Length: 324
Image (cartoon, rainbow, N blue to C red):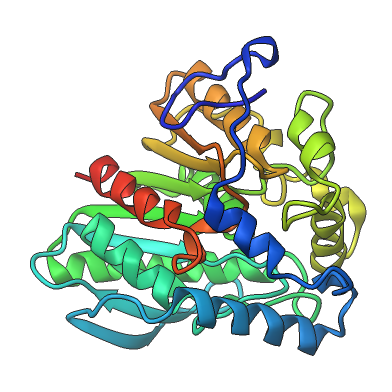
């Protein structure tokens, strides 16, 4: 399948009119030396430094905030959430818990500082960016338990601030965690979510035939490769069978009823494009409200590459409308 920008309906392959890569996306790819090894082949400390350096270069600084403060969530299942809390200027509408990308192996609060600031300004929410424990040092379900700690903190913060809107958002593998926690939250009486926003999320570890974007776009030409997903899962999971849990592959949940309104943003040249669309379709079939917005001519991760890709600003403007 291919998707038109800002549509909420898949376009059948026979009617697809693929758009060329945007100038920013093509320049970003061209800037990578042809003999550079994939991130997954680097020593772990070098891979983490490379991704953090990239995002610092192409997504910093973010907009000014009313305040940026550290916080710590309560103990849940033996884990506490390390948080960085961004308060926008003016009246906040609610609290949004955000999970950064990086395959549960890479990324950190500093690398996603610009992203979190833009997210707070766009949604008019206090954003709690979660510095969850990374793999392979911390295997599943450590990061999920840290996410539950973040949710508990957010619930307390809502009461303290006199707000009522509690949202979840996640970028790439952070979208996996946000979706998994939204599915779990249906069984937590004290948690009522107002919105779930997923940015080019990993919704499934095993490939499915109907997700053709993994086959056609996942050979490494377009920044993210299918091997990257497998590498991340291998670092995150002690047992490959865990990949079939909804915490790890949210598309394998038993049902999708009871979720809050959902926004999914995907990229046309992303191997993960079709699984994000599949999640939207399943939420709708279950009677939920879900919007799919594909930026056809750009790449996985584009929202965190704001200086390189103008589509990033367009996506945050879209979020402003979705949260208004």
